Length: 435
Ligand code: ADP
Image (cartoon, helix red, strand yellow):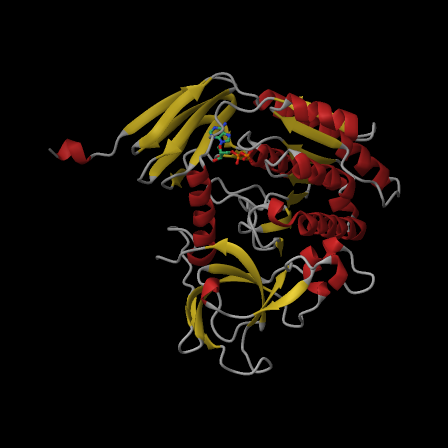
């Protein structure tokens, strides 16, 4: 009987260039590299360190040289794959590394404008774009660089929460489980997880982040030489494709990697200038193809973690109630949004184009439709004007309740009262706080 309570232990012997693909079920699983050298998406595993992989976690443990891995606990699935595209991704890294070395040489010779590689990863949904971005960033760090990670996918929120477009200076490898340290992420709220809902604003944010990246690179030649890795969303048709062309131009990319889509690869060859190198690479067989429900669950988990942290480093958010019965000037928190209903041409003020309504900033009145909506907090000195469309968020809150009788609303906030600002930006991203 006692034996039944022993956790399941399994050992996996990996040969050169093999990977152990893992999917964790409902319980934590302990993973230990017993011997050899192995990594998770470019982050090396320490030998004999025990890593806890939480429920729902999915990854691969890859080895170039061979390794022995022990798993304690029951996984949803675990198998060794002998065919992986890792050699191709490593090759891409070496291509980027050559570019960085040239930039560093120029820098040493006094050329302070020497630029490292700027790579854009694209392809349909679920081809491993975020994962390859992570691998390339980790390898860059391991080679002593400090690249910038730009995430143009508001659907998942790799370095901020879903509904944002963001950038992060990467200074250390990603944590095996928690991914990159997001504390200094610069996130712009798009207001939705789908760029299609406001493509004008999405393109504006792409250009805004690109300008900031340029400023950062002009300020630090080392960062400039390290380059930029740009992750994109899986919307590759029509306006989505056009947004990718806008991004390539805005970030002045020199290499575009198309994962698993010949048509997209050929379209880029036609539409991008000759100096941009376009390569087609295969996706890994380990990439999970997610259903709409799984995507929604993953978004929810990401927002949940923003407020509550993880089991291993929990946060304790605050519940705050505000009255909206007060006059506009006295309200402790007021809300704006980007985009209004389309105005008929005849009503447009002089000089305004039809498209402008999509990036127009307006005040939002509080009502029950705001319940469960995520809001982006704007800086303390921000006011309701057009500058908000180019202003990064300083944090996020959720409206958990609106009492129209009492004219109060309740928020979930990582910070206690008083909030650092009185102005928040509306998003149509929902989060139901059932913790
Ligand atoms: P995309 O960015 O194209 O939507 P992701 O990089 O987010 O795709 O990958 C989708 C999922 O597949 C993620 O959960 C990721 O951890 C998982 N994944 C990617 N590569 C592998 C692999 N080689 N083995 C196991 N899981 C993988």
